[in-house]
Image (tube, rainbow, N blue to C red):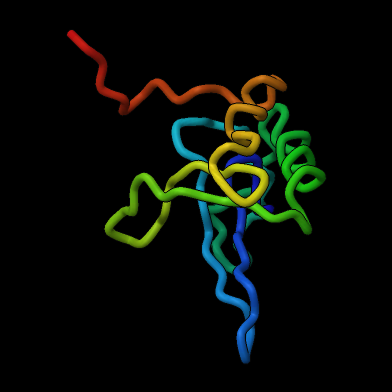
Length: 118
């Protein structure tokens, strides 16, 4: 679990290390985790946690680590970042993780960049 809206999904090992993919949860926004300033770059500075960032990451960590999940990729960007939905269990009938984060008040639904009906 990288943050409240990004996880690494690891496949089953088959004769070597298991394949991994980073999945960013579609259409939600969770607070960003703190980052330290880059060493040797004087123009950068420490960035603190945004509100509820730690709690959102911990919620995902407790819910997902060691569990079987199913995911669908909705968008893949030009730089290879994948956005999609993650479900607890073997198929898409399981708990929708993004929905659970929003229901718990740990993430918000993204409104920017979404086209509406005019």
